[in-house]
Image (cartoon, rainbow, N blue to C red; front, side, top):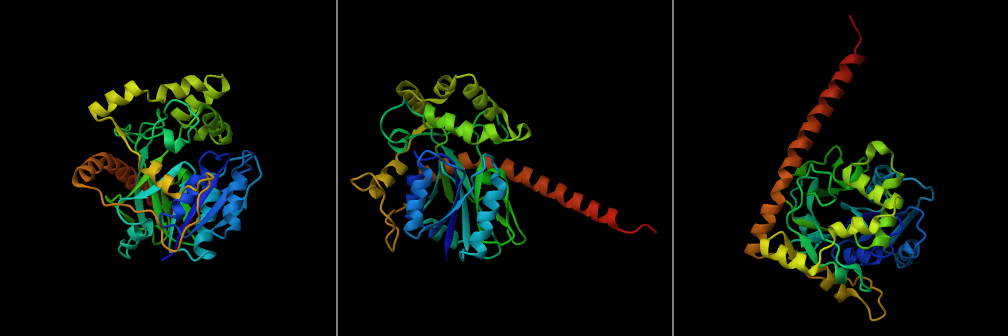
Amino acid sequence: MKLVMTLLARNEADIVDEQVAFHLHAGVDFVIATDNDSDDGTTEILERYERAGVLHLLREGADDMRQPEWVTRMARMAATDFGADWVINADADEFWWPRGGTLKQVLGLVPPRYGVVRGYWRHFLPRPDGDASFAERMTVRLCTPAFPGDKTTIYHAHQKVAHRADPDVEVERGNHNVSGQALEPLRSWHPIEVLHFSLRSVEQVERKARSGWLRQPPSQVVGHQIQLDDAVRFGSTRAFLDRYTVSNRDLERGVADGSLAVDTRLRDALRVLRRPDGTYRLPDPEPPLEFDDPDLDDAAAYAAEASVLASIEGIARAEQRVAALEARLAGLRRLPRR
């Protein structure tokens, strides 16, 4: 089985090296990346992996944000040009963590009739600024994300999807869902955690707004995006980030009441992969990272937290029924009148 990851990046130099290196050691065989006019060193990092033969780099130089179009193109290329069996559509701030075995091993367990597997977003919160990398600093995970429909905060529960390769796949905005002729989702099973490091520093938050949300049409922007856009426009990015930053006192209280957890898994994994000079080694024939099966306590806590995604299933099914009905009505209108 061949597993290909797609990656869309713009000015993500503080995280993209770690992101690509991690996935190449977690079961991903090849990466298709689109760089959208980065000027902070992201392009050079991706070019290094391209020279090593493990990444195919596409370049989009326009100052726009056509995420669904670009990710769909990469997902289709994975099927038609790179022999993928499964595809992961990832963002630069995401790390897909299998709950036992490698990513490839997990996806290899999926029965043939199913073509989509859901991963569960798990948010890591910003910590006070320092010289250390994001992974060394950000070891606090939120255990009580907002309801999936609550878009007033960036830290709401949501899903990401892996899918069987399909030359006609359509990837939805945000990579939260896909559609295709034979892409039946395997429901109520979330064998992959998507570790999410969205807000990392003041400089990165400002780049995030200017590189993405501020370039999107207003009709596509939701509550938490508007808050960030306003913070950048009016010079209050530090205050915006401080609202989410976890102090030592916050951490102590959060661990005590169960709303926060200390989670060093990614930090420890990257330490395994990091060379003395700070770069990351390329994958060996076998992935060197090991992903242990969760114990009973962890499995129970994870199941309880991920159960909120059942509401997304209902919304998705309703949207599918509406789309099918609209298609049927459109077909009836095209029939000749007697």
